[in-house]
Figure 1 (cartoon, rainbow, N blue to C red):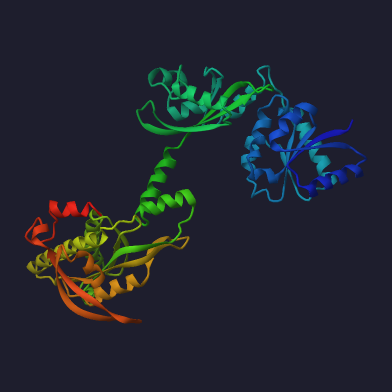
Figure 2 (figure 1 turned 135 degrees about the horizontal axis):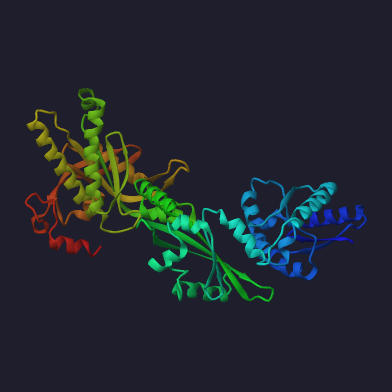
Length: 489
């Protein structure tokens, strides 16, 4: 009798090759071509000797056919062979777990195809299925799994539980249900009814995450994957629930996200999660701050390396704390230079005021530190600080060690404001001054020439908030009247 083969998802070239092989074998097999969605219907119709699956289906929704074939009463005994160009790329280990029987490398060879078909049929014929049907096979395969596996009927009644459940939960299944209950497996579970409704509406599988408590009262996060199984008439018969302990994964995820949050803005991280990439953006109003310590090279010669880094770190930590209160984004530090910007990645129009307030607070902190150092007989650190408001481009640079950075003439002018500033003072450009002049006391300093820029830039020293907007005598903390003004931006 001719061997019957169902071919799933093959290219026209492969189909032609198989027909040619068939002719050379004197019509030793009969070929039926179909797609992944219709394969079960074709299998029930002809009950083939073998099912060949082209690797092209692995990148489509049809990749679930391996599991569907394994769970079907008719196709369970039929060998499923994958035709592949690259076994490593196609992740065969996962496919074997889903029900793949064997694979053949392309291009196909007549003798190899015949040999493989005969060999896998011989092996499958040795597989004995007890009276309980292929659920007993599930029992054998899932028994040693480190995951918890639970088999439910269509009404939510638990038919069977593997040993992996107890390993995860720390106690037997029934004991756990009596003590704590379960989101899916408890009797009359609302969670199960929600899942059941979705399966009846066409969902092919669902995954939910929930927290459990073990016998030792430890908390774990569990991911439950539910897969519905249907009979040949499309009726829901069973549901397989696979439970995986994802506590370690979530912990590592939190650590990674915390690390990323120290490198990239939150909004940028969220965009990377959703889209995988971050596009550079143009911002029309951003206020950039540069700060640099006076004679840092000289200080480095008078201090040990560890002492110098520790002291610099103390200043940077405080700067970070101050700018965070004012909704300012830290961009980077280069040596003793500190750079941050207001108005990105979330746009706002209060950034000239935010950055100016932060700069006054930073200089106050540095002055207080200098007083302490002088009292101990140490050399005081002094800071130059410059600010400019204008247009910038911002985005993420690199694909290995990521960095959020900004570019544009605004950055150059802010750096120039810092270079020409005075120690202990806040030096702002004319552009920034135009935004803040009604609320801060400023002194005009004149103009400064920019490199590669024909126009000179006005400079102003910011002394303090005007008394009517200040909560303290130094004019650093805004009062309720000024905070009300800020809230409008």
